[in-house]
Image 1 (cartoon, chains in turn yellow, green):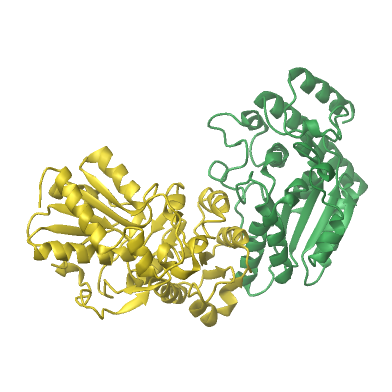
Image 2 (tube, chains in turn purple, green):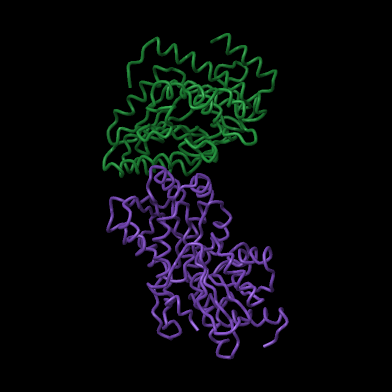
Length: 334
Length: 281
């Protein structure tokens, strides 16, 4: 049922599926981007190891700038470096960059259309024990409203690595959303990645009754939910969206046309986030019933990642319920 | 820099007067904008563009040019007027300030005027960008290039934390070809800086941040040129020049009045101001 063309990780349904943190993919990708282009530089606000920027900082110390605990400085200095031909990558926790320095990003990077990559790590509620202050569940909303900004939200470490390498090549400001916790590997090195392209990851061999569009690590939960339906003979397709801006309108509309009902899945506030972006596409192009999985107007709290994902309604069972509900709304019962 | 002669100073005084006249004319035409700051900075802009900066108006993107980063974008009337008087674009275009479709946006925007080093307006963002540019230039060359980096700050925006974050990194990185010039005119939109949020002791603050500090009369061409020369001679340390200026300089009824920070003269006030400037030309 996994899309064979994409050479996905066939072990992703296993209990002991390999797990790697998405941020680690960023860290490894940044080294490759640095190998490929000597203009790639990196800046960090005292979270080099936490954001896995240390791989780059160790290999290219002369191209690394430590700005201290100063996220506003982080991005404004990066903007200045971009003006002189550098390709700066900045990293911090998403809560602080772009959380704290949003206006600096807007004015000095996006308004100037500077090629700067802003990596926001520890995004989502799965940061866990650190609690609500450190759980960025608004960052996609903050970044996708800024003109010129590319917004990438990889589903696993391998996709994050590819997104990082591609981000260095695109002549625009880029935001990459990263997560702290180890999460299942969904793709493989062979899986293609292109900014602006969405991919059907899971597709039973019949017309879809519901389409799930998902982003980030929760793509795994979405696939598990779809697999459970497939075992009951119900066709649910899963579209992975690693690029939220630009968004692959065609893939979303095609899925809506085929399935007639959509569920969006994100580890983020549903207001203004990924699901909202999908809804904007659908209402303007092909309206179908839609349910949104994500955080509903609440702050997070301390807990283990799985406790929090369950508590805030983003577990496999919640996705299944949303699929059932949206099927009912389009007039079909299970 | 070449020799500063009395003749050159006289020419710059004349040029600064013309720039002040342009500022008044464009603000009257625009009907809104900032007046006091631009008039107060006319001498420094003149010294930069007509004596200090390495630049080429016929080739604005010349790679070897010195970089000038204007942080407090709201004083753009003096920036635009100086660029026009330097030959970057026709003087006539100054009348489009703040109008629909103009290259001369209310606050500078690179998308509209592509040879600006940056867009600005929101305060406190310029120094960090200048630090980034200077740092990148040193990385590009493996050492300091002959380029000089100048960053113009207002005193009011020293109340922004981002400015001091940039100051810390500039000192950490020992950016010796970075010179900051602070327009110390003591006013901001709602009053005097020392009433709104005191900045003094300002010299000691910058010294404590490990910058080389000079305090000068921001209306003396001799002092401006000498201070910049001194700043460039400093080793392993960025420099700041606190330039004492008179807001509204050159127009007696505007001078030292914070009320002229954020408003434009009407036609009558503009005519009166122009008359005084022409008399003193």
